[in-house]
Amino acid sequence: MFVRQTQQQFRNSNADVQFFYGDGSQRSWVKPVGVSQIYMMLIGGGAGGNAGTNGGGSGAVTTWFGPAQNVPNNLIISASASAAAGASGGTTYVYYQTSSSTLVALLSANGGLTGSGGGTAMTANQFSNMGLFQSVAGQAGSTSANTAASATTFLSGGSGSSQTNGNYGYLTTTNGFLQLQPIIVGVAGNTATVDTVLTGAGCGGAQGVTTGCKGGQGLVIIASR
Image 1: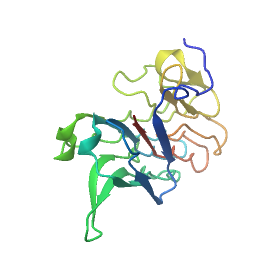
Image 2: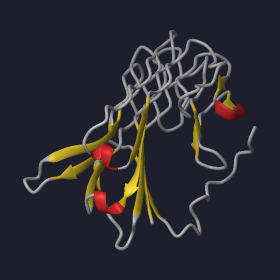
Image 3: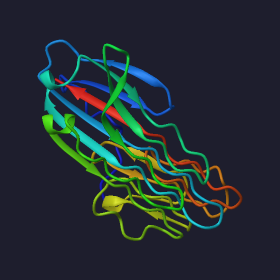
Image 4: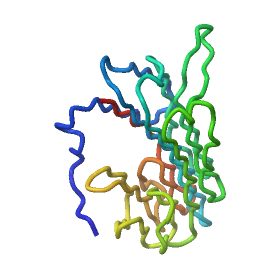
């Protein structure tokens, strides 16, 4: 198991890195002058857990890396807010705004599904073909600890037992977390007694006693250099 560390991996990298944590609002990104490459990672919102039945599914993860010349100078970012207990997670978007103020979705990451299903992967579109593109579905929630970590995503679905297991040996018995260093991993919160346990961005909410727990908020990271 890797030791958890403070997230300082972008310092001294000569990169412009911006984080957009989900609150449901639309925010602007302006392409820095002189950059040649851009990386974007989108995380869909995790679904909220249900009362006494199962945790929520985690959001999908979409990544894109390519030449800066293929990315518009201005983007609109909409990262999903936390889902309520028992509700599906929201979709996270990166939009391009046309001259007629129409928003066109360039990239998206679907939210986890109520009833424990993981968020579905994005279908490739015209923009995704302009660089290296991947979209991976989220992990389904569980009625017990996620004893087998997902083989396809670093985000865990919500749990409802005494422990939630994530990738690389990371686990939690209370609040969840998302970390980017020394390796990226998100672990859902875990509870069998209360409905207020928090979870990592994009991870599913834990099964609760009376209402279930909220799902993790969406997230967009855009790095350019």
